Figure 1 (spheres, one colour):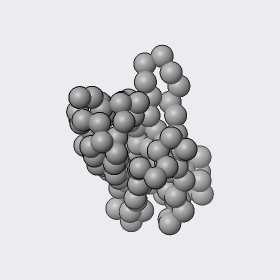
Figure 2 (cartoon, rainbow, N blue to C red):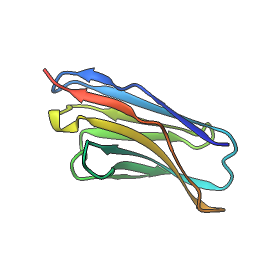
Figure 3 (cartoon, helix red, strand yellow):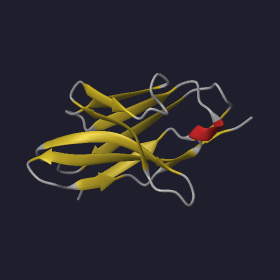
Figure 4 (cartoon, helix red, strand yellow):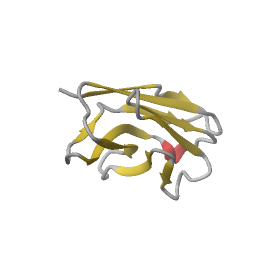
Length: 117
């Protein structure tokens, strides 16, 4: 069994910062892309950022403000969010997607981020 546990969400004022963390426990064979997605009520889950090794990928709406970092040895992924905007308010989910050695995908339970004054 693989479990992803996120932490670090909360309430922050516009222009502020938050850092999300995600730890995956269990057996994770092969190579995984690690990432963050977000979802607001009534909408689909959108990609925020992904990382494989040193290769980082960002959606246009967070590029230059958010930074993803990952440790593949420890199965942890982080999302540093700076200059937050009210439109960043969402539930953020971490994701581990197996790209070599299988096709498993795992999701965390989600953590709420609210940007409001």
